[in-house]
Amino acid sequence: MRIVILEIAMDDAAENLNRRKFLLTTTTVVGGAGVVAAAVPFLSSMAPSEAAKAAGAPVEVDVATIEPGKISTVEWRGKPVWILHRSDAMLAGLAKHDALLADPASTAPQQPPYAANPARAIRPPFFVAIGICTHLGCVPVFRPEAGAADLGADWPGGFYCPCHGSKFDLAGRVFKNVPAPRNLEVPEYTYLSDTRLLIGSDKKPG
Image (cartoon, rainbow, N blue to C red; front, side):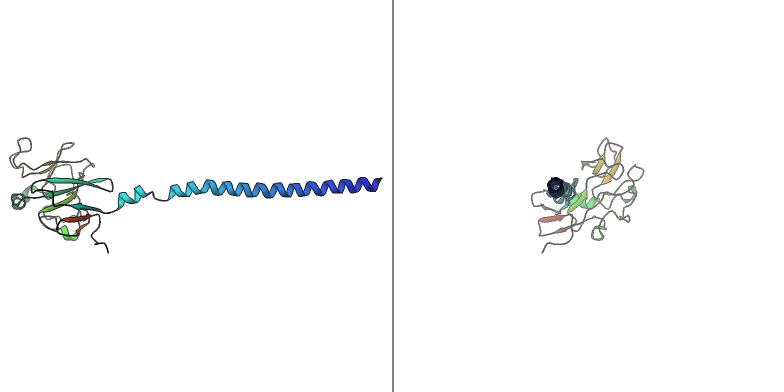
């Protein structure tokens, strides 16, 4: 009788051990699957979204529809970028007010080398600039009318920031004695054709 009881007890112990191994294996597999399932969305959230990728991508712009004297605004990297089609009169006026400007020769690196010229542009008629004041990041307004009553008789036309009074000419060059310390920034850009600009890169695709 004692031998039978001992054999039954040993059988129960072996069965319990097998059950524990099965439960341990099952728990490990399910837990591992849970970790993977939880990690996938977490890792996905770390990868840049398509919108984030698009936000930093260069932007193509057709300038054929921008008439002389008019300005167009596009968005690049969440910032406004101005494309101003300067008239012949606007271009001629750029050389007449250097004495009013803090950096008329654009010596500060606020533009690519190919835009470090009096027009601050690859092709003088089209001025491309990030439309954000270099003081506190406000967005200036386009004020092309020379001698505007509220801006003074010596105002040559340009961009005025009503937040704190900073002034920039039609090449984005900052005036003396205003809060803004630097000229407006000119982004990298290139011409894909006579009428198409690529803003955000100066390397032509392909």
